[in-house]
Image (cartoon, rainbow, N blue to C red; front, side, top):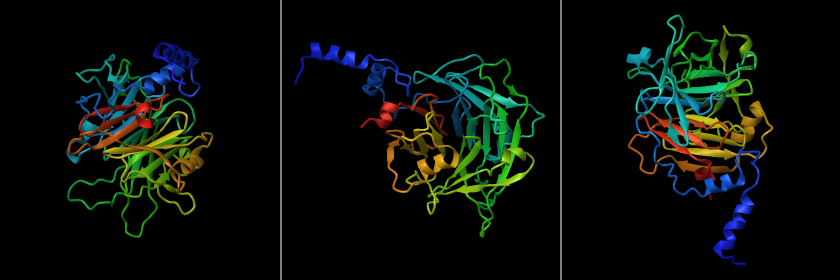
Length: 352
């Protein structure tokens, strides 16, 4: 049956003008509008020059401060003190937004650490957010000093002592931009290898009171801190590999990933590299901890939902190293070492 436009449009309005979707919080009409929003080109960056954030290496969305994100920079041997910083940015309506305490044409706010804090940016690579692993309460940031990129001239892969710095999530618009204290420093190492060489890692995520890492290898592996680590803050913990029977690597993942994030409803998991990202989907979302990781990332033969190239005409070195889901949505936000910021709406990721 072919209906004229004067009858079809009211019918579509009636069909879509329903209550909010319990999954997304959007009405059907809003979902339909988003899916048909052809004007959005996610391959064009929404910001071209993030203030102070060259070598951006980690990005995570705040769970208690709406529209705010935390970022960090990787280090270089000669300027580690100046890179021992956190940065807050605000992103809403696919744009960087000004906020109290921020500065610059691409607004950001720099947070430093009190001189009394023992903290060093040896090779910061990623950020995670989640409840305090010691108590299961509040919101903490986890800074992953997890990289194994030695300065030029040093033997690659020899580092095997790392740390994750845990701190209470600051208020991005608070009166002070000095972080007064750490909650904990978690030190760890990989299991001993015959060669004495250990993988590079640029991915960190917090899940159900556990801290996971994904190695930056051609066939990425997953490790986590051992059970009970949170009750031993002074120890050096040996990482535990997470596998699924004979499956030891992330199935179908982008080679050498630099970031990963799961959606708030646990139905999506994004793993990405310098020029593209992969999204895995799963309808079952009641799994927790290792069971969730195995089902989502370590199940052989599991279909990937989609693969997307980040930019249409990327520069020679796009070097996307930060990526996170926008809290409460299935939109993806990505940051590069070259100070670019991308926003990929769900409709552009999952459209046929």
